[in-house]
Image 1: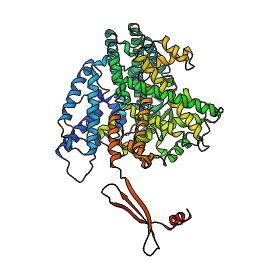
Image 2 (image 1 turned 90 degrees about the vertical axis):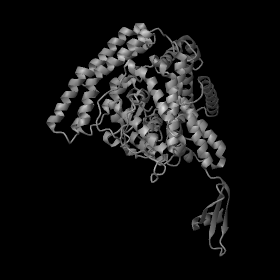
Image 3 (image 1 turned 180 degrees about the horizontal axis):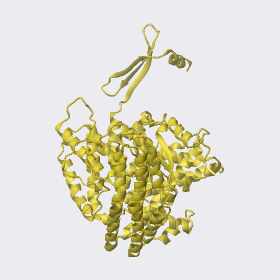
Image 4 (image 1 turned 60 degrees about the vertical axis):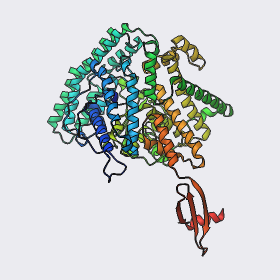
Length: 634
C-alpha cells in the first residue's frame, strides 16, 4: 500500500489570501500565458501552499525546502480538527468551486485543463457527501491518526536545525491535537455514530502496545540515530536535543496515547452499531461517497458489485481450468528466476527488467531504503507500505516490511510485494509522475483507486517478468485478483447490503473459511470500509482501459506506450483518465501504407511510410546493411 498523507486535502481551509509560490509548468514556456492560465496558476499555487501550511508534518514530508515554494514563515501545526472546522468544509468547498468557475476554461492549455477537470470533479464529489462528517473515523486502529503520525515522525528528516525545533514542537502539540480528536469521538458517541465496540478495543490495545516500552521506544532510538549523524550540530547540542525529545515524549506524546486508551474505554459502550456502515443513519449514502472517493470509479455501488462478481467468476473458472490441467502447479508458483536472491537484488532486477514494458524509471534502484516496521506496531500495520519522497528530492524513498507477515519467509514471498511497493509499483509510479513536473496541486491530491489499482496491476504484472513460466504466472495473477475481488464483495455485502456475521459465515463456508476467518474478515471490512475496493476496483478499471485501448488500436497497440500514457496522465478519476485516453488514441498517427524499394542505382534500400495525418511522408531512410542482409535471408 502507499501510505496516505497525514491528513486528507479536503479538510484544508482554502482561504482567499493570495500566497506566492513556485512556477507551474506550461506547454510553451516561452509564450506569455493567457489571463485565464495566469489566474488558474495563481489559484492552484495558493491551494498548494495552503495545503502545506495547514499541517507541518505534511509540509515536511512533501518538501525539503518550503522557502522554494513561497513558504518563508509558517506556524507549526497539526491542523484543525475542531467541530467548527468540519462544519466550515462545506463553505470552503463551495468557495473553491466558485473560484474554479470564474476561470476561462477555454484559455487553459491541455495540462491545465486536465488539472481543472480533476479539481472540479473532486470538489463537487466532496461537497456532495461532506454533510456526513459524523461518520468519518480518524482513530481507526488500521489507519487512524495515532497510527499514522508516529510513522512520519520516525521518518522526519533533519535537514536544518529548524527541522529539529519543528519536530520537538510537534511533540508538544500532540497532546492538544489528540485531545481534539477525542472530543470529536465524544460528539460521535452523543450522535449515535461511535465506532463498533470491537474497533474501540483494537484502538485501546494498539495504544497500550505502543507505549509498552517507553524507555526503548522507537521514537527515541530513531531520533537519536538521526541526531548523531548530523554534522552541523555540536555534541552538546546533540545531547540537548536527545534529552528534549525524550522529555517531550514522556510529557506530551506518551500521555496522549494513555488518554486515547482511557477515553475509548469509557466511550465504547456507547456504540449502537453491531454491523456495517449501512446500519448508521445515512450510512448507505456515506458509503456511496466513500466508494467514489476510494476507488475513483464513476460506477454505482451496484455496478461495481456486478463488475466484481463477474471478475470473481471468471478468475474462479480459469483457476480451476489451470489446476485441472496442471495438478502439480502448486510446486511451481514460486519458481522465480534465481537472480532474485535477496531484497537488494530483487529491487535491482525489478528496476532492470521492467524496461521492456514500462518507460524509463525516474530514480535508480539505489534510491530506495527498505526498513522493518517497529515491532510494537506490527500487529496494526499493513504487511508492507511505501513512503513517498519530498517532491524536491525524488531519491529519498522508503519501503517498510512488516516482520509479522514476512520474517522467516523466503525472498520469493517478497518479490510481488516489492513489485507492488517498488518497481513497477508505487515508488516507480510516484517518482515517474513527479518527474513530469505536473502542477504542484496534483501532487497533494489523493486518488487511492489509481494508486492502489496501479500497485496491484504492477504486482500482478511482475509475475510475468520475473522468470515464472506463463501458466504459473497466470495462476498467481488470477489468485491475487480473486482474493481482492472476494474481500471487496464482502465489504459491499456487509457495509452496503447489510449482511450480518451469521450470513457472512454461511457465505464464507462456500469459500472454505472457518468461522474465525469469517469473523476476522467481518471485523476488517467494518473497521476500514472500502480498503479492499481501492485495490480491486482500481485494478479492474485499469484493465478495462487497457482492453479498450487494445480493441481500438489493434495491431498498433503497444503495452509500453499504454503504460506511458497512464503514467503521464497521473492519478485522477477514472472517467477523466478514459477521456484522456480517447484523446491520446485519436492523436496517434495511423499508418496507411509502408513499403521497401531500391534506389535507381540499386545500391540502397529505402523504407517509406505514409501516415493518416495529412498524408505526410514522415519516415524516409536508408536501411542499414545488416537489416538488408536479414531481409534478403528472410
